[in-house]
Length: 295
View 1 (cartoon, one colour):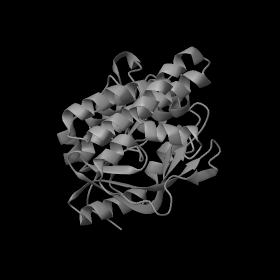
View 2: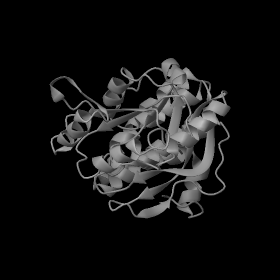
View 3: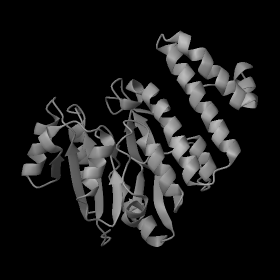
View 4: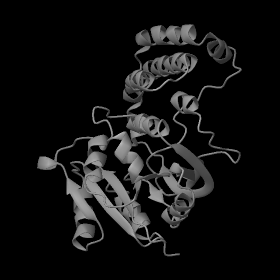
């Protein structure tokens, strides 16, 4: 189906030589033909850049780098890509994940038919390093209620991989926060949800790779620490319920306590766990008694 709208796809890449070809091919093989692929190499040293240069030399993508080939982080890399996009719609894809072949076509068709929606996301599958499916990202009964307080409490969908956003929305929200080396997706999702409506479709349109070297495994402490600043900014920027802000702060303290305990810094864990219980005693009691299962 030939839909006359260009989609820009940004891939921030850092040391992903084992997966980057599968990621790039998943974009090049889309059923929607009008795709602009921009890859930002974030100072890779493992052969990723050389792989990307082969695609760039064939005219299959635009390859960008930071000055002096520096490693600036994912947010800075996405922002560099945003300076060069020309599409009306934007997708961001992590350099070890993949799109299903019809991902862009399906999401673009929906957004063209629903001009009131600024961001659309879908279902997908988590996969291992060998592309074997591990689990479904969203349950069968998942729905999007456009509840901003819920999104503040839990970053329950991904801006990379599964979302398509109108460029006009990104123009209003501004760029990704480059001071955040983790959790920048939650910060941007909140800013988007505060100004536009989001929608969900149940089709499985992306593959989210889980492996031992993924950012979600290596940087848990940084993610939760950054979460406190994201929460502070969100509460200043938008009228979230005070109870939501308090409960989110409790979650952040609990997660920090978990990380300290699991990484052998057990002397740092009790204060965070105590704060979590004080801020949200009902949920704290449910966790202690086993009525709520901790992930």
